[in-house]
Image 1 (cartoon, rainbow, N blue to C red):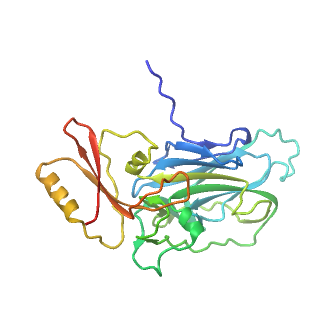
Image 2: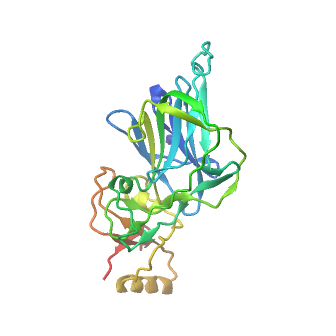
Length: 311
């Protein structure tokens, strides 16, 4: 009997004991193809995303020193984060060093009693160059959820609470070439959330651009995880989201394939994705800007993936 290894659901820095994970429907999602940076300060893994699903972001670790832990979506900071005070900073010099923090980010706080939950949205596409995101750093971080940790040397309370406006969803040009995407991490409709306490200001030992530690979750649809070799191919069809944005006229070949499949009552799934060239070693170079993916059962029952060209 073969014992399959337990799925990995947390990114963890081992000796440092800091860790992070993402939950959907209250359950940690599995993480694939985990890599650590050469400097040992960043962990990256791939997770599955499904359009319309809400998710929460979690961070845990030792209270050996004061830190701020913050969530980011597609390179944009989601809120001010949470300050974790070490026992020493609170005047508890008798601390054993075994105390740990465990925090949950369920959405972006928009007021004392309101937050907007995190969820996977459709791609926000545009064919207008003036509206599209052009910042190189931002483009490279599309398709990611991050938790960044910065060390704190001092902190103090603010007299009043401050809430910034919700960041606008990044608009992606159809012809940009930087990554492989199927969804965008975004925000849902406002909902009630009980107050979480006062706000603090801090002096940091690390910058946002170069934090103490970074956890990065690259989210993709199941089909793109399979095509990228991060997960084995599934025998069962998986519901897939369609990208939003300007309508794209299907090619004659794609239209004929759809008609043929419909007439033969075959089960197939389609997905419009954006495939963009990248300097990232995890993303292989590709030639197509837009790809139409069709999957159906072959004569021997195997799954056949067909990439349709635009005529």
